[in-house]
Amino acid sequence: SKAKLFDEKTDTRTSFKDVAGLEGAKEEVEEIVDFLRNPDKYTSLGGKIPKGALLVGPPGTGKTLLAKAVAGEAKVPFFSLSGSDFVEMFVGVGASRVRDLFKQAKDKSPAIIFIDEIDAIGRARGKNNFTGSNDERENTLNQLLTEMDGFGTNTNVIVLAATNRADVLDKALMRAGRFDRQIYVDLPDVRERKEIFEVHLRPIKTAETLDMEFLARQTPGFSGADIANVCNEAALIAARKERKAVTKQDFLDAVDRIVGGLEKKNKIIT
Ligand code: ATP
Image (cartoon, rainbow, N blue to C red; front, side):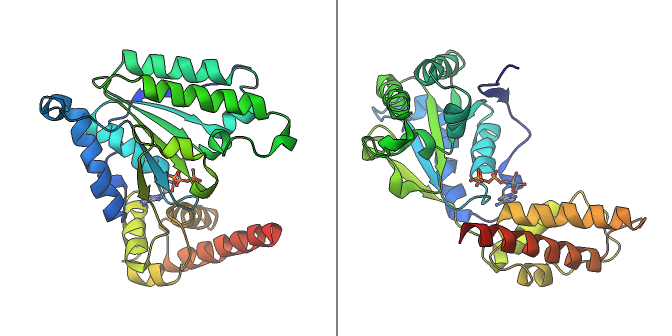
């Protein structure tokens, strides 16, 4: 079986409209969209376009979604890979994979490179030697640093990386000219959860006008991914009951189910 290294697509389907809440983060990445759309506007004044930004926040809060939306809004290709792929699939070829990825993105620039779970390759060097694959990981990390340093001022490739463990990252990654911007993507508050429900209820056939404020209040601690899950689960519950449309009770049952799942997950962790 062939492992897929990265998806390159001009993702014009994902836009900021798909990303609910996250006002601060969206404002920060809007600047990146403008760099990608009009690089000359910035470089003609002698400015340097940033090379990378780190999206930091808990799982399921929309980091990947936001990165895709940046590419979609700027109408540039989106190259993505996940740090865990290097650990699981690309053993022995990590550095050359990084080189290939950057070459492809540069050829298609302006472009976005997205590295999910960057902590899997970007953990501080010289630690966790017991894993055995440390040299390999360090080579991959060093190649990433080399590639980012090697960008010319007019390469117009911006690297976005996501992590929920910024604290374990090698400080070298955060140096000027690398991931020198950090953008926080937090769990949604009640108002943001309402907005996320609004996005994910769009394609769903509901039997009554749903009080999204009420749903938002029923889901404290839920991430955007959890809410997307609730909406999907509610539709499945309604379908199983042969309903023609999804009811409020189906949503409440879905919330209960997701809460059950989250509790189980937490039990395993603690
Ligand atoms: P991970 O750290 O686990 O990779 P992530 O932060 O990258 O998570 P995403 O993969 O972007 O999270 O989110 C998963 C899905 O959850 C999205 O595809 C989307 O359907 C939904 N979602 C998450 N956050 C939001 C949001 N702010 N607005 C709308 N939908 C959201």
